[in-house]
Amino acid sequence: MMIPALVFRPGEPKVVQITDHLGQLIREGVLPMGTRLPSIHALTRQFGVSKFTVVDALDRLKGQQLVHASQGRGYFVSRRGPVPDGDSLGQLLPQDFLSVSRRALIGEQGASRPGCGFLPADWLDGDNLRQALRQVSRQPNLRLAEYGDAAGYRPLRETLRDRLAVLGMALTPGQLVTTANTMQALDLLLRLLLRPGDTVLVDDPCYFNFHGVLSLHGARVLSLPRTPNGPDLTLLERWLREEKPRLYLTSGLLHNPTGQSLSPAQAFSLLALLSRWDCHLIEDDLYGDLLGEVPRLASLGGWDRVTYVSGFSKLLSANLRLGFVAASPALAASLAGLKQVCGGVTMEIGERMLTGLLRDGHYDRQLRRIRQRLCDAGGRVDDWLAGLGCRLEFDGQGGLFRWVRLPDGVNSETLAQSALAEGIALAPGSLFTRSEEGQRHMRLNLAHTDHPELMARLGRLLREAGRGET
Image (cartoon, rainbow, N blue to C red; front, side, top):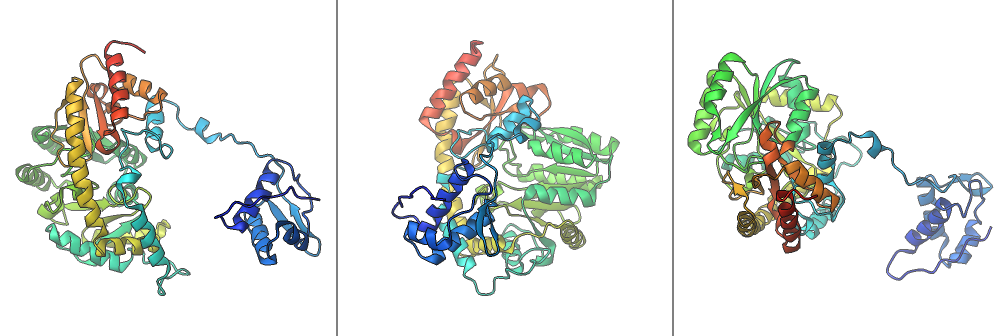
């Protein structure tokens, strides 16, 4: 059978172009299932390339399950095409608005997402990340054929130990366990620390995934109000006495979504209460590095009372999914064992890459740039919000988020629905709290919001929502 001609494009490997050309013919049904392809010799003549290039292209097509080889007979088309483009997964997922909103915050690259929780690509140093990945791939001692250490790549844990020591956390590498991300870290910790029916405290508002992961573990959740003066300590003391919660999951610095950071006095008062009533604290510190060398709750408490969780997906790369836990020696050992049993051993390639980025100063240089850009963006966004009649009830200076009180009469879900219809993914307050206050608040990401055209569109939608327009 004759294959339609291919005109090669300059600057792109010919093997890739041949693979794409034949693959497209198969997927579109031009080459039906069972069709015998021309011989390697014939394809070599037709495309004007070497035999090795043709064999490489056929191997790639085999890898895509588009062709198969028959001994002594040649290559045959495997797929019955064309293949439907539809994806039923999206139809099977929950279709309520809050579930749709959560999915939209991840969304496709290039979408407008002022409600998301990570930095835009142009705020990050992608070239340096690629260089770091290339450097790791060339390391002669890279263990490609083996599992990594269950606790994580030791040089990375040693680097993390040294960085945490600057924050006042004294620990050994054995007290550090790496994870694929902070939510995996929390999931593993909850397996070790909770039993179904145990009471757990979370902030109100809090990161929406906390409620999801706690429900999977059968926890009874109490939502402690997070006020501009910090957690409601009076209510906390009453609940500690009456409800006997086993854990409190919170953030001391740059709390998500409010952006609030506890003062040293607030932190000491909180830790004293938890210690008195034997309630363990899990500190989620995913954004604290934006404030620099500021003591964390884990710096002030002890490892028997506090477990520390952090990571790098928010401030280094959303796709570099690496988190870690700092805990007591016994808990860290149990965590490493559970991680191995669950098959959660993290990729050493990524951990080596992160080690290099930390040790060569790249991460700290990037942090300095991000801090300055957030400071500049925060001033512009705050002025814009004030001009629209919005209020900021929390001091989120230095952070990524603003917890915005919308003008009277504006419903955050209604506003988010209108924005989503225009391709803008917002984070209504009802994602973060189950109280009525969620209808009046919105979380905004400064880095994604600080664009004149986007702010103009959001301003229009906000004014229309205030007038009750659709």
